[in-house]
Amino acid sequence: MAPVTPLRRAAKSGSASSKRERSGEPGVVRPVAELPGAQEAAAAGSDEASERWNNTWAGEPVRRSTAVDATSSPDPSASPETGMASADDEETERLARQASGVTIRQLARRGMSRWELEQLLTKREIAPEVFGPELDRLAAMGVIDDASLAASLAFTQHSRKGLGRSAIELDLKRRHIAPELIEEALADIADEDEVERATELAVKRIGQLSSYDDETARRRLHAFLARKGYDSSVVRQAMDAAFATRGRRGGVRFQ
Image 1: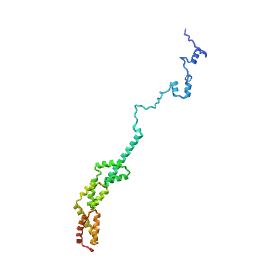
Image 2: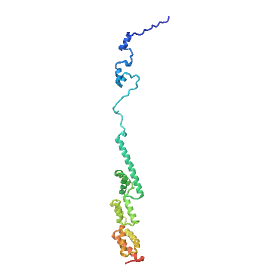
Image 3: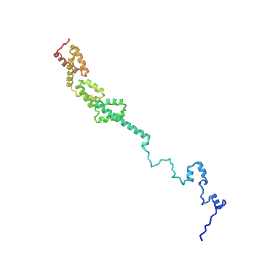
Image 4: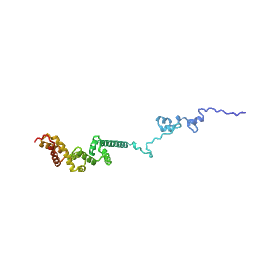
């Protein structure tokens, strides 16, 4: 004979199991909403209460912390002060490159003293604390050389323009070249060279004064040589040599 399986009767409302469900005895699974305090936690909207009562399907809880991780180091670039310092350094470097470029271009066109370059860079609105070190660097390289400039100007102005020591000295002072450098440059012009150059100018000039009498011609020639920067002794020697040629040239002379 086949075994007989007894059928269980549904528990009545007043049965022991029903009583255990209402009483919350062990072994009975109750809905979460019926657990003590669940409704109060839901009404309060507390995240911690919700996690405490129903975290079966929730993900990993997010840990909130206001403390700074001791192992992490701050990013220096994130600091406003560091960012401003970096920007200032870049601007200073840019202006230094600009000062160097302007200086080299100007020196390629004509000779300029350091003082003249400083005035030019100031007009370009470059601060002295920026172009000062750059000019020092170019001077150390020999790009800026007031001594060579003074010697070159003295030779050129004397041989080509026929200027005397006084006029050359005045021009070098106008360029704010150091006095000792001016003295060295003028020392290269010998006394006899100055007399010779002044005489050449006087002889050439006296030919243009042939229509004047000796007194007027002498006065005009003296003023001409003085403007060229020759001192009185050199002017006198040059005029004597020039008037010695005046009679040999012929032409009308008014006494």
